[in-house]
Length: 195
Image (cartoon, rainbow, N blue to C red):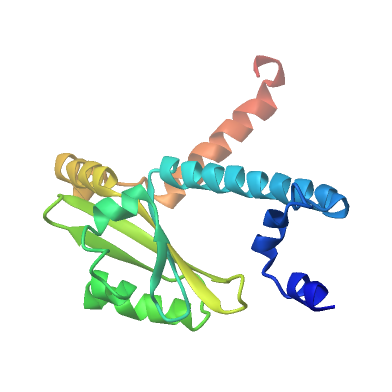
């Protein structure tokens, strides 16, 4: 009886060392363990695919939890926010002008956004905020920023090259257009075979 109590209350890790049990694999659990191992491999592969996707979008992507703490960010976002490791929240990484739209997203409003000008990198990012519910049931925010620097440069060059007053052409009077259309209609009625 004393021997049975010792074996019964031994830690599980110590059971295989008793000599009677060569391995501690229960046959009943083998299919379950194989299935769990398969799911772990699938999760790891999906995680790698998601990481590749996030890094290949050429967008800065940040995920924040309900307390505005940055939970993850991709490589582009790390280049936009080089001090992300020292920052406790997304508010520590962004200028005050951007905080209002992030706060609105944390409250659940959709469609917010802001622009972030990085003078040291000579870039402008346009961020959109997206609200979602995370795996724990709390509201979280995803910030997606696209580099719009080149678009801004091209737009500025276009306005400098072709100012608005040059593109505004004088329009013919309305009455002149009506007269021309009436003349064309009358000409078509007189000689329909010419049309």
